Structures are given as structure tokens and as C-alpha cells.
Image 1 (spheres, helix red, strand yellow):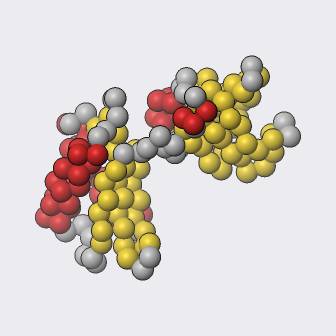
Image 2: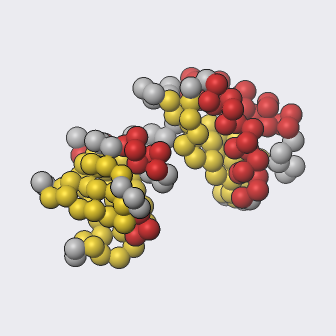
Length: 152
């Protein structure tokens, strides 16, 4: 499955870059007994549903032409949404100044859920301000990180 994801990324990255989109995530897995290839794209100012639909058709044709996936699959192209996941340095840098919800594998300072403003990204850490208190969270301790626009 990882090999398919890597090959799909190689095909779609140049197209995304040319059109000023960036690839947030690509997943390929079995859901409900069927194979699903999910491509999540975004751009400055956000991506509209009609753009996702158009890209779904264009990328679907391209991926079929490249014959990267031999088994029948469903392609889903979407935006990251308001509660988008944060995984990469690029995601965290983009989310600086925004409201986030961070969960950790084990408690830090007696907590393992932090809701606040992402202040920044350090060397292997992120900094979240919650109720006027800043907490530095090691990236390898984060189990889940999401935008939390509902806090606004």
C-alpha cells in the first residue's frame, strides 16, 4: 500500500504544484471491503467542492492512464476540512496562529489533551498556548493533532 501511495504522490505532486495546490495527505486502504484512494488537497484561501470534483475527474483519468493501481478502487479527492489533521512540519507551520487540539500518547504536565493557539514549531516540538500558558510539546509525543476551529 505504501508503494502505491508513493507512486501516486509522484504523479500528482507536479500537477498540484503547477496549479498552486498542495498535497495534504494521500491514503490508500481497504474500507468497507473496497479499496479507497483518498487524496486531500488544499490551496491558499481553501479549496471549493467544485474544484475537488473537477480534480477528482482529472486525476482519476491520469491515474488510470498511468495504470498505477491494478485492482478496482474508488478515488476520492477532497479538502482537509475545518478540523484538518496536522502531521507534517508544513502542516504545523501553516497552522501557526490557529486554534488546535493536540492529544499526546502520555500525559505532559498532567494532561494529554491541549486546546489552544498553536504558537509555533520548534526543533522537534510545537508550542501551544492555552489560557495564557504556553506548553512545549515534543512532536514524537503527539498522537493526534487537528485544527479546532470550533474553539473560535
